[in-house]
Length: 264
Image 1 (spheres, rainbow, N blue to C red):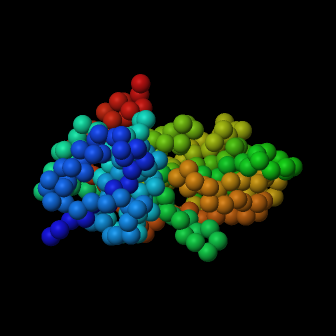
Image 2 (image 1 turned 120 degrees about the vertical axis):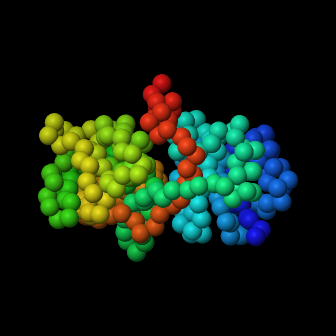
């Protein structure tokens, strides 16, 4: 079977030697390849050259085509990436030999307006400081399966997947979740109370977040991209997505990776 590799790259294609070496090796192995943002073709696998932000961009392509993602670090930290630039020949050969192994990563889902959105890392509700409002504090009521958790006065709240637990949620004081665990984490952003702490809960349960009537307007974003704005008394429901994405199992020690990428 002739394989088609779709490449998503945010690096300078004419200057990046790793990307050029990867394409040359694919062609040597008689594998078709093309850039996803240039050709309207269906890939069998997506290869990302970039950092974590580029991987988050690739999620929609992976869902659309139902194919796995392989990633090569060409960013600053690249915590989510599978391989380093020195591995590109190995990656091309593994693709040609069909020897890559994959595992499922959970996504979070949210319906806003008439559309349903999916995210690999997180859903974030934050105070909108760009508008003139009676308040600059987000005042939120949080529910898990209609059980009231707490009322939160803060800069906002993050609902993160295990993958996203090492992103914004971690910076806001959340815990690290192993990628294979079946749960999400609610993490307040700069809470005004010592009693409203991060909460880990089963990903089989739905979370409902309502803006109280004395809240600031809020910005709603997923994986770092704004999708809308919320007003007092608006509410959203967040759940585990029916969609999943597949990423590479490459034998890395997850906890060692935390130390190497985030611990220095």
